Image 1: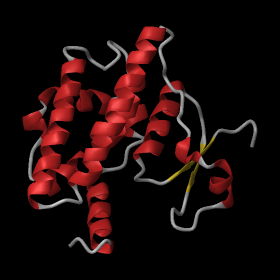
Image 2: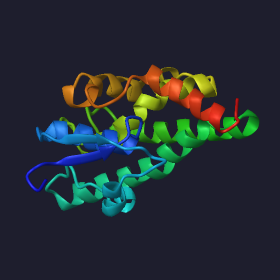
Image 3: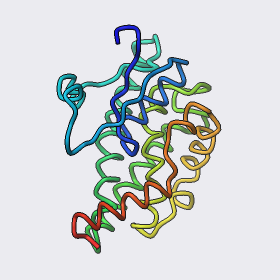
Image 4: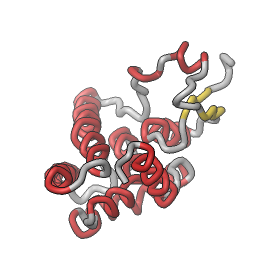
Length: 192
């Protein structure tokens, strides 16, 4: 096991998708072991990956690294948190969360500017952090009754560029499968 990279994952986990994208970008082969999130494996419990971060695709420049960490933290706190709430909420609360989510994406559009990727000309750390949540965008649009493309065209163009990369397209699940999963979760949580 020391010579092999092993990824303990679950197919819809954005965190695992980040790792898959980064490993593919680096050309690192790995063994994927899908986990039962209800009955956790001894290996998962032993490794306790919940609080560990993965240092992938970080630029050598300390200032750029600190900027990338700032945007990664922003994505985790603003985008992921509001995305999780958006498909769960209804009514005015959902509208409030939707506004927060769109504002967060618009802030990221400002950072992206006219660059191909968040780091400039090459796919990097911030791209790896954000791209997994895009597989949930279809579900968010259906649940929240809005269009990310209409609200954030630069983010949509960035997503299309990212999806042209084999490392991304082969690591992210089909958005329709995510939507089916969201419907199942909502049913199990008594939300539908």
